[in-house]
Amino acid sequence: MRLYKINEIKVEKDLLSAISLSNYVVIRGGVHVYKPKEESHKGEYHVHDHPEVFIGIKGEAVMIVNGRKYRFSGGDIIVIETGEEHHVVADESNPITLVWLDVRKNGEGNSN
Picture 1 (cartoon, rainbow, N blue to C red):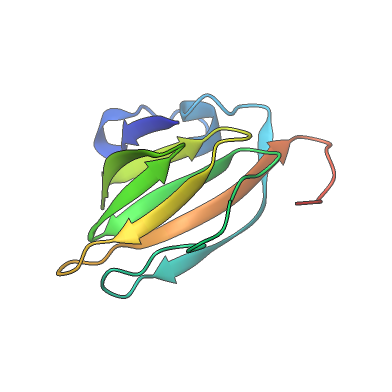
Picture 2 (cartoon, helix red, strand yellow; picture 1 turned 45 degrees about the vertical axis):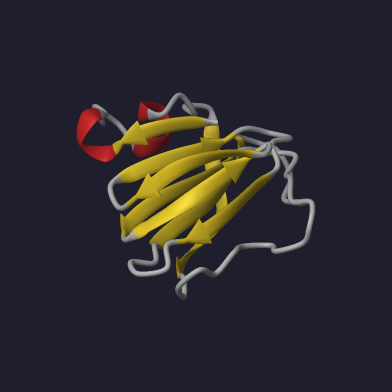
């Protein structure tokens, strides 16, 4: 897991290059507006065979990665590495809105 602050990264070409994913492309993604205390993939073991990028738009959450808790807020970017179990738990009073991006090395397939 890597955590970045949007205002601290230098984007010269594109965001993926700026967060050390220069040979990667976005294969799918979306925006999720969390409800208070909502947990992603609750009760599931959730991992990928590729990195996943989360970009906080506004609000607050806890990102649980391999059992460790990290604060996640609007303006943060979290890169979940291949094989890391991860869940988002939205704040009760200020739930997070985020963008999620599944990325793969350029030229790889689209399987989960």
